Image 1: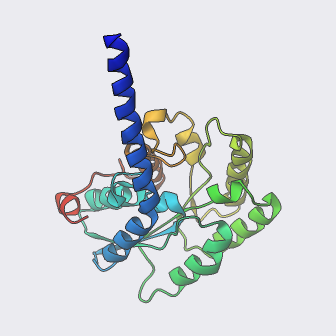
Image 2: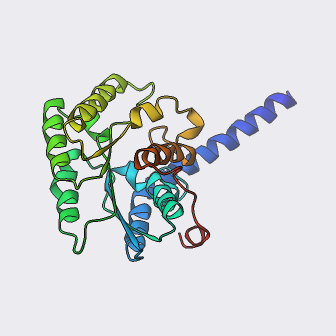
Length: 240
């Protein structure tokens, strides 16, 4: 009986922690968006602009800078020895239509020389309710408007969910379109996330957690030609 009570108490604690993490996840879109607005005020010797959806926002990482965009910025700083300013234009819930309508025009309107690095991570929200033909057309339009050297990801693996086969089809569409734009750099997220384990995912099991974002950052870093996705600097740990 004592052992049963002990396991019951342990299960209760685990459930409570899970509920707390889900509650924090609901607040994340606003909190993370506010972080990136503050982060945009910090300039750097290099300029990095991120387009995309909640994955680019870093949702389900413990802190925004532990998402793949923050880690990739740190990796770029480590590999070049230069400071990196980040303008994260991504929006939670964005589809490729949204990126075309609002984020790409903002990128094109930036003053001064082109950014030193641009990344695109979008498509996951198109999987559940989109039209593949429209997606192909709009993704091609998006690619045509991006500067040379932009890192463009396909759609990550959806694991065991009901939309996994659809997501794999969208990932193939991305790769097919990208094959027609040799000036862009494809990022094979589907391949990189195929072996993701449960502990690499966030509380909602849909977004990557800290470990999952490190996996995303490694895929982008490989496409960029730097060794790793980086680690948060001491200043960023303190200034989040």
